[in-house]
Image (cartoon, rainbow over all chains, first blue to last red; front, side, top):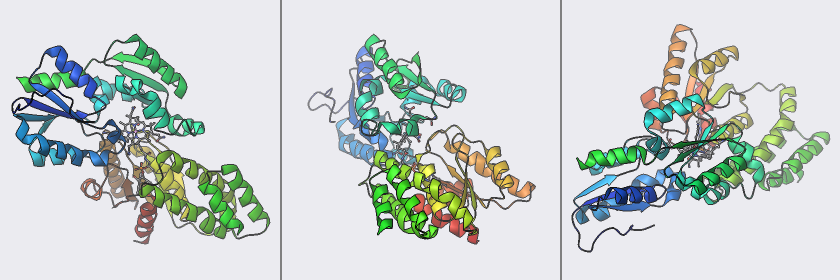
Length: 206
Length: 212
Ligand code: B12
């Protein structure tokens, strides 16, 4: 996944947002909707989320490659299972980032997410992106297509699928409902919009 | 030769065949420890190596682990029957707020294969349950797993509670920790007695901790 083409040639101003491919579509839609024309987006492949150890160096490479091409860099990655390594790297590079455990928490808001998981620890979360790519990322990604018997090994302790919706797309809602059925889980939907991603970028712009 | 077949059946994820072959070996009077070491543990070691080396992926590793689990279920009563003293007792679980259990289960399997008695409390386990279970079972070690940034503080709380219980209730329980976001630095910071990178590492660490 490369540059998400928002930069004009020779542009050395503006803010570069570095994020995960799993949220890039939403971040671009949010920037467009707000008319934040001075911001452009570059992302790392979404599949790195299953291999978080590789995220810090991937982000570092993007920072170094773009440092002289823009006025400012902001990283929209939360910890994402790097055990604090991403934050350490960002401190070394002196780059600001959004705080939080993972994108699910950022979409829902930390307090809401914590309350949700406390009420039902057996919650499995889908976002618009994960719903859209459920077959590829969850079914194939976890090998459930090849070994359907692993469903209970993975999800045996889960009760509920919570779809955190960024858009109000009925087709996606139906897909998320079908995903819950595939996994044998109850279904719940919560509309989050862009959640704390939007709040954070607004604060950055002040 | 037949033990090689058990190994192969694990590598082919064929749990039915593993059970069948182990029963045949037991009927033929083969030593339980030989079946365990040369069939199951050897296969688990290979799976662990391939997984760490990136040539085996989570689903395949899980399929193989299930075959090992099926085999261990058959062997367990016979192992108890041999009267071999366990290397120690480990109370194992994933900390509160975290439902990931694949890595923990693998650690449990390897510890069991390594001669430890394992009391597996499952997932989403709070500190007090770890401590009381360890007390009831006169455990040497509590082993904590965490995969989430949000459950790491729960690991820290559990380690603190265990160390407090060691002092106040006059216990001597060692704590070992692991999981992908955990490292030696973090383990030291929260005061755990040891950190294990993977399942074979967990067995080696447990041996050191009971040897202390
Ligand atoms: C498989 C998986 C799942 C499965 C879990 C199935 C199950 N029954 O466990 C499913 C799909 C259900 C799942 C759910 C979720 N997951 Co998940 N999951 C993973 C994944 C891809 C692999 C983990 C795994 O099993 N690896 C294989 C095992 C063998 O390896 P391991 O766990 O590292 O264990 C080894 C060592 O660490 C060590 N070890 C482990 N424990 C211990 C203990 C001791 C004492 C010792 C010594 C050693 C040791 O030995 C093991 C064997 O070698 C990771 C990404 C990753 N690569 O880590 C994400 C990951 C851990 N999950 C993550 C998240 C966010 C979630 C969800 C919240 C996502 C969601 N959409 O809802 C939920 C969790 C809900 C909850 N309440 O817990 C994040 C965590 C991010 C963060 N900031 O915390 C990760 C990092 C992915 C990501 N970047 O988003 N997940």
